[in-house]
Amino acid sequence: MTFRTIIEPFRIHSVEPLRMTTPDERRRKIRDASYNLFSLHADDVLIDLLTDSGTGAMSRDQWAAVQHGDESYAGSPSWFRFLAAVQELFPFEHVIPTHQGRAAERILFSAVGGPGKVVPNNTHFDTTRANIEATGAEAVDLVIPEGREPRTLHPFKGNLDVGALEALLARRAADVPLVMVTVTNNSGGGQPVSLENLRALRGVCDRYRKPLFLDGCRFAENAWFIRTREPGQADRAVKDIVHDMAAVADGMTMSAKKDGLANIGGWLAMNDDALAEQCRNLLILTEGFPTYGGLAGRDLEAIAQGLAEVVDEHYLRYRIRSTEYLAQALDASGVPLVLPPGGHAVYIDARALLPHIPPLEYPGQSLAVALYEVGGIRACEIGTVMFGRHPDGSESPAPMDLVRMAIPRRTYTQSHVDYVIEVVRRVADGAKDLRGYRIAWEPKQLRHFTARFERR
Ligand code: F0G
Image (cartoon, rainbow, N blue to C red; front, side, top):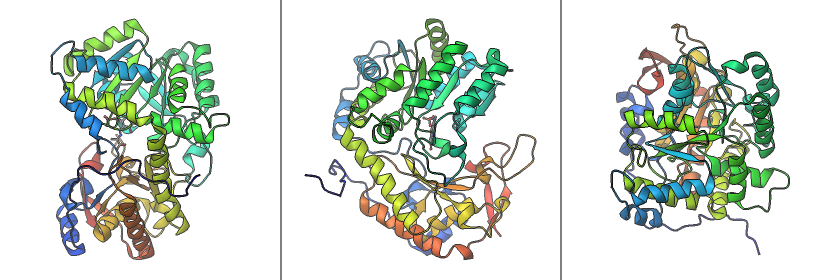
């Protein structure tokens, strides 16, 4: 017997109070923060959808595992539990623990990047791109055309364009140290990549003798989409699908702050012995000894347990359904979204919702501030504020002006989400009265984190 309601497959064991604020208070707080949501104190936020990274709730068994944390500098039993848990899903020869995903990226690209190199990906996440560019190499995004169109439906909008990859390799094979694919494609809306696409990429990489690396941050969510959307996958265990994803790859980078279900951590893994040695040497310079890599033994334990929990099909069914639930309700109310919704977030198309605010007056910022003022919700502008300023000093509209509402794992209940739906609807109803912003001050790089805004 089945029921329509998909419930949270857990009950609450320890609660964190939310601090209620009034709209007047929030208007003052955000004005004092120069209309930058990163500058707010988090306890002035009611529902925090800034990111799904490191913000999830750990389970009873993860907190119990924390108590088993062994803080030996070298060869801790916690390290061996972590190693076994990672290799149970991703049987790579070498696993190098890091304090989070970007540390794995920095080490990998310090080893294989450099001027004249080019690294393709479906869409590089900002830290991946920044770490590649910091070495003087070029980062190129080759997602399929459907992945760039907010309202074009496609089951695997995160797929990498195989033809475009072939064309790049035909021209510049010698400059490509490796091919990367991000599962799910965060910057493209949290969209999945199919097994068929991964296998086709493997074929191209074999022909050109190039390693294929996964950015595996949201591997379990990607595996769930494969199970539910790809022909022939419906009855398979999530773990088996993860094994198939791993089998096409020669290595991976990972942020355990997402599908590790932990608050900190990550790793770099690979089969190549020489590359692993080079990476371990870099690890020791900035992260730590290769059996802890910038993490405490207790963090390694929390991740090991998190990896066992994240491939549970009841968890994944609830996880993906709760994101879809938010998206369906907003879509039914006519709020323009990136569709279909991704795994970890719902993206509102602010440019479509606020057509009277030109991109250079930051419609995404205007919407994100309104969500906070009206309902205490913190979301994240992903648009012209984030991507509009170029290294040569010029400014131009980003390809899209989106606002991302990222859903922390196992943290908010359905009534929190119902409240979010109500707030977004209220803001959308008053959209025509929202105004644009100008930037009063900005730093030279990554301006979205610290820029100060004024209302127009
Ligand atoms: N790759 C992807 C696809 C990511 O989404 C992130 C982080 C990273 C790499 C870097 O990992 O934060 O552990 O260093 N994404 C977060 C976000 C910050 O909000 O989407 P990290």
